[in-house]
Amino acid sequence: MRTGRSFRPVEGSPRLFISRHGDRRELWTEAVGDLPPVYGERWVEAGNRRLRQFEPGRSKLAAAVTRGWTGDLPAPGEQWLYLGAASGTTASHVADLVGPLGRVYAIERSVRPFARLLALAERWPNLRPILADARVPRDYAMLVPPVDGLYADVAQPDQLAIVLANAELLLRGDGARLLVALKTPSMGRGRSAGAHRDASEATLADSITLAPSVSLDPFHRGHYMVGGRWGRSSKLPSRPASRPTPPRGRRRGR
Image 1: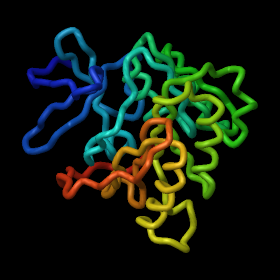
Image 2: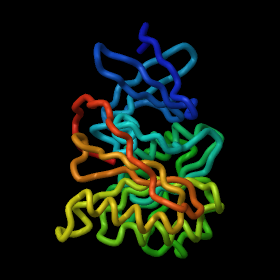
Image 3: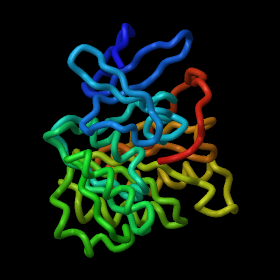
Image 4: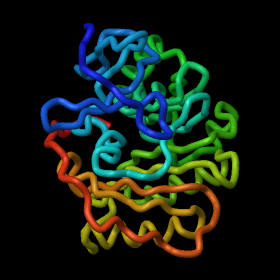
């Protein structure tokens, strides 16, 4: 569908675009794959680009950008490891962001969503599904080259241990990026969501230079995006004083 709407690229992420619809800001990625839509998202043609709406209610990464994430995002030509890819909702958008010359190695351990992920990869040629357990990265290390970044959406109590084990084995080294969709309800009820975030940042600060985290409410309640660049930091980052109130969106998906 052609559109007269204007789109502008996000600074530092040339395959991610913003448009405005009334008083609402919408996100779009430049599609690597082909129709039909992956999860019912809108597609439009803008100039010589095919863009897919990147919905914050369906993707924690889109929610993070909507909520003011200022850390790095996947960039064209990069190789990323994706832990907990499920059926590929967000993984397909990460594949869009790295572009046709990049690669996304998508780990999923459950057979049913992996079957859908495998079918999706037939239309997204830069998406490489791997049926494996993210807890045991040595089982798939021979299938994944050193990567520029790691994105994790793993709903487990020990999700940070899983992330760090993969990062230590498969990230290229200092300067590589780490993005973690932190699901605090999976981490136990002994702490508040904010306390889980603070403890997670303190754990990650031993290995990465942290970007300011963002809450993913109201799109994904009890979730935060945390992460930064691989390499030790000397202190935790200060948090933004305020953030814009985002539009409400549907809540599902990864």
